[in-house]
Image (tube, rainbow, N blue to C red; front, side, top):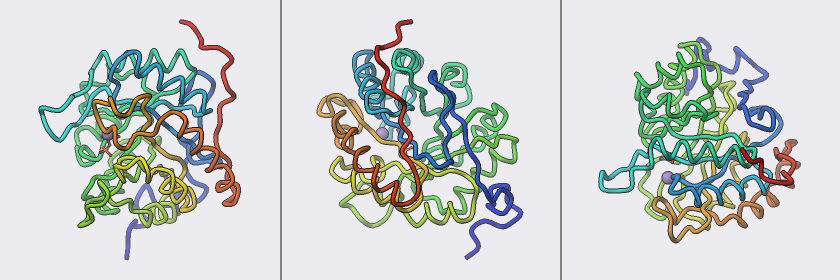
Length: 290
Ligand code: PEP
Ligand code: MN
């Protein structure tokens, strides 16, 4: 099977040592694609100042460097919570700054680039993977991009979407496997770990795994995270929520803050076994006031 032709800009042969994507954080740059395994965590959506604030504290306390939180949400139903938009982006940025964290948040349309100007890593969601005008605009922006795999996209289609960013001059691209649609109904999606191994073998781009959206189940996040690390992923994108039962979006897959620390403790020995380390920010003594 030919997944990535040698002529592709993402082909591993072009950059055998791999690409390192640098994410700016208030406590220094965070590299994705190096030896360190980077865990990004936070709620599916920014819901309120208190919610994102508590999540940010938990993420920082666990030693993670990157806070996730959607402000612009791509919901399957127009009647579902659509995110707080510009206000959500502002609340995410404030909570992150107070806790010395970088941020990752989804962009649905190039018109949101300004509202998301402080976001360190722009997420292109599964539903937008083939939004070519958006990919071209992000290529021009030169900002780090997290490109999720479409829910029914082949690996080749996913890598061709990445090619839009690379061909447009943006090398700061991280891939994210988030599960694909299969006949299985026990999980929200089916986590395709073969894709992680294939992408690591054939491309130079870093790859994250989202165990939360792949499974839709809190109880599967730990085993899938360990499996992702063993398969060669460069990090994780994990949903956590201070009160999952009250979440406006995806509560059933969100870990509690204390589960995040447990997850990291379980990842540590596994990562050493595969010759990697877990990225940890030293704990902040006190929240930085603005
Ligand atoms: C998300 O991460 O918030 C999200 C919507 O995920 P996906 O695009 O993978 O469905
Ligand atoms: Mn979600």
